[in-house]
Length: 86
Image 1 (tube, helix red, strand yellow):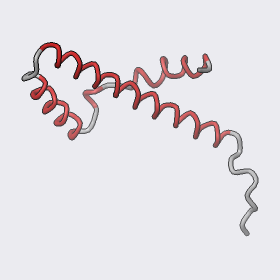
Image 2 (image 1 turned 120 degrees about the vertical axis):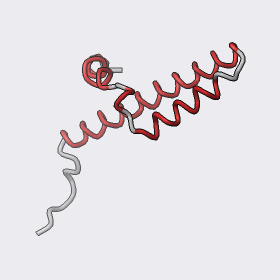
Image 3 (image 1 turned 30 degrees about the vertical axis):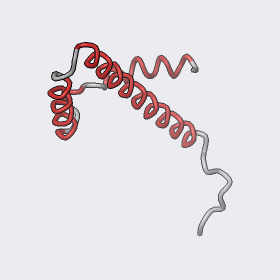
Image 4 (image 1 turned 90 degrees about the vertical axis):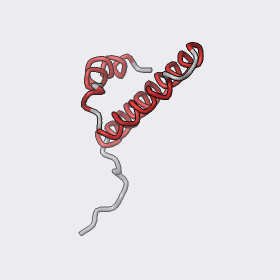
């Protein structure tokens, strides 16, 4: 990945990730999941938490990448080949 994107993510996107400000439905689902995970064995709980954290990282990185892509398209004059409407 381009070093600028890494810097941009670490200095802009990552600090914005504050779970306390996420929507209520997310907070409720997370609490339900934590309650269900508490009934698992330690090994299964570790695997479940690892999977959840991996998914959150992947979704966050994908959303950030889409945002950068759209920003680059808009900055490049996209769509520059379309005819003007009068």
